[in-house]
Amino acid sequence: GTLPLDTTADYVLVSLDGDRAIHDRIRGPSYRRIMENIEASGHKHIYVQFTVNADNHHVMEQTVCELQRHSAIRGILFSLYVPYRGTNGEELTREHTDAVIDRLIDLKKRHPDFVVNTTAALRHLKRDDWERPTWINTCIYDGEVSPCCCREDIVTAEICADCQLAACVESYVIQRMEPSALLEYLRYAFGPSSD
Image (cartoon, rainbow, N blue to C red; front, side):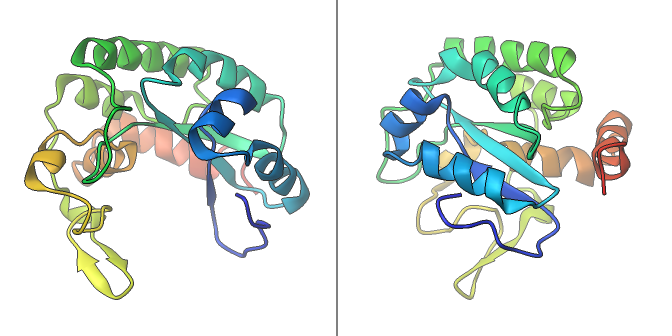
């Protein structure tokens, strides 16, 4: 999002981790530039990726309400912070994690067409009963094939076992062909706001 969003990609996912003050504290002073690039883009399928951590979980609801006012933003996907190798201190406690997921489920109920996370994936995330790594998430990063959406040099077996990345859980519910998740995805792909 800090660079112009001049692309023919089907979808654009831009990281924003809260309101301006919180985002800039976490990622450096970039919020204004990201929002300017979103508004200037003209792309019809821009989504926000919000990584929930100990410093920003308190502004999730406020951020949803704020971003919904921007017609250029089609929706928001929440992930929980994963402490990759070499990072720490931002992760939520288990108690906070459960409470945050409950709040995300509530946000999904209140904003079903804007919160992109599926209810099925959020429930699996809370129960911590999804398979990792998911075979559907194989990625290539700088020519290196990884069995997950994370590069092998930043993830360990322990980190993978505790993973809470939304993209991985969403992939899991799709690979299992969970009906409610499939219906939600079809609504996003072919819904009334789709071009």
